[in-house]
Length: 207
Length: 211
Image (cartoon, rainbow over all chains, first blue to last red; front, side):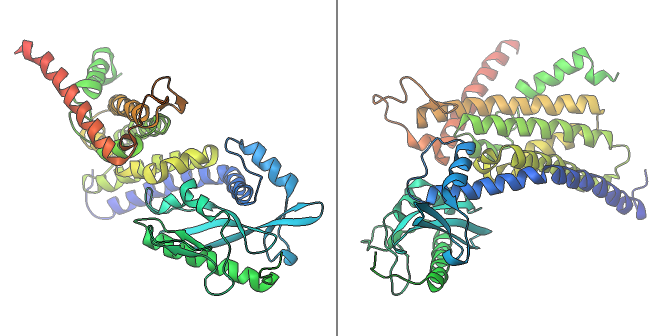
């Protein structure tokens, strides 16, 4: 076997090309399913963030059905937010947010009641934060804090506080050991909320 | 038929991988994933299936190509082959079982760096025919699997009071204060330490009389 010259280089090229082609083929074959899964993850996040739609233990199909039956797709009048309507009236908005997390983009939905200030929930459909640290944001312990919080009219709509400090109406505890994730998530959510409020108007304390 | 894949040879390979040279308690390889994915039995099962698939096939592939692979670039080729199989696992999980892929997080991708995979390719696949290399990889990863399952079973039952997600009679009840530490990373160290200790002790007490 020739150990020097062009042979090893050519060999590496050929081997890489062969294996890569097979992988590309695999990815192409499963692309539709992957997209469907991503869509389902989004629907689940919307259902989780809006009030009264989600229960633990729902199957993917049930979540999909609830989404299709009860959630209205975003349009210009809702500022890009999904809406939950009862008898034609908007009950809550599911506002998508996205931005750079610690490693990769964080994408999620924040649920806001019809008063445009009360938070009804938050859920994530895409994140690759550090397992055990930043990834704790997907746990109920963290997400549950948002429910019932009231977005501030002045300053940052939501504040992430150091654990242990007293909390105000728009404060939640950050994730211990994941300062970067917490700071970035706070900025991502606040930017999305402020841009949305600029489009649909702040109703302040009006119902 | 090559001798290594024949009856006696296969038996020998199986004994080596499962017991005499068990990757976990003899070679102490692949500990990182042992610690990471063993807090729930179901995660462990999927991880182990992925590992069995990767080790067996990459070792066999390395072996099949060994006559053509120049010695000085063999590590690159091995890494490429291993990455190839791991990405296949990742793609398939992503398409058909996205929640499991999310559970396992980065650890599927990290199979690429699992010492057992490269270790078997280097130690066996590189110098033996593909049939034997496949068996060698298969039984080594089975040796890894059964230790991981023992660790995971204890961790899930003691820490969560469940097995494969099903509540266990005594451990999920009020009489059992769940040992949360068992499902956290330190629990894996304790459990693995105990398992390695017990198995080495059994192994030694069996070897004593033969001396």
